[in-house]
Image (cartoon, rainbow, N blue to C red; front, side, top):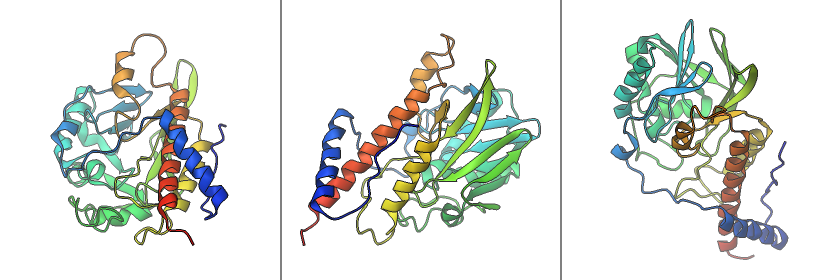
Length: 304
């Protein structure tokens, strides 16, 4: 297991120097600052090629927003359907792959932000699927995004009833598929990483649907009145993610796991989604960005 350096908040010069050193390390990793968020961005909602990731797992999202269908003989699981406006694209992708949209039985959500959760209410109504979500994000889903620690009331969406409240390590089972929900907060208070296994070529791989590790613009790590435990939560999340050993990993935005590059390499040898090194690279760069922001905030704090 690749050890990531733990960063604990201690307000002394030695720790501040260490944090600033981490900030300097970030210069080797480009940090793309997020553009101004929009309630709906058509550039994030263009059709993408639906395709198999591995085993029963299929990509059915848009060019920018990842949605995944996990198929079983007893119906299907759908993770993160995107915007309200993404639902027709998701529906078409599922049918293009030869599956029935109406056979969705379970809905899952990795984070209760509008660009990953707004389509849930429509799909739940149309299919009768049950929705499972981590407790801390269930409140956001049922309020339609109102009360988010960062966005407040700015990015709302149709409220959706959560049928099953999840806690860390809960298991979601349908047919022969078994998913484990890991509470990995920080991006939202209930952000969730799901893990499962899938086989290809006689080997079985751990598959990780990784939580978003983006720290959205405007988020305060220190002295955050709406999320006072955010630093501890991020530390816990990184410890969980570091302990995983995925052979296959994806996340909620297609650029994070280089979906375009993987599609371009399909049929040219090993399944490009089998990418354990890519997971470690992503996780290390993410931890550097966290360290950088913590360092900057600590450096700007007035001295004693």
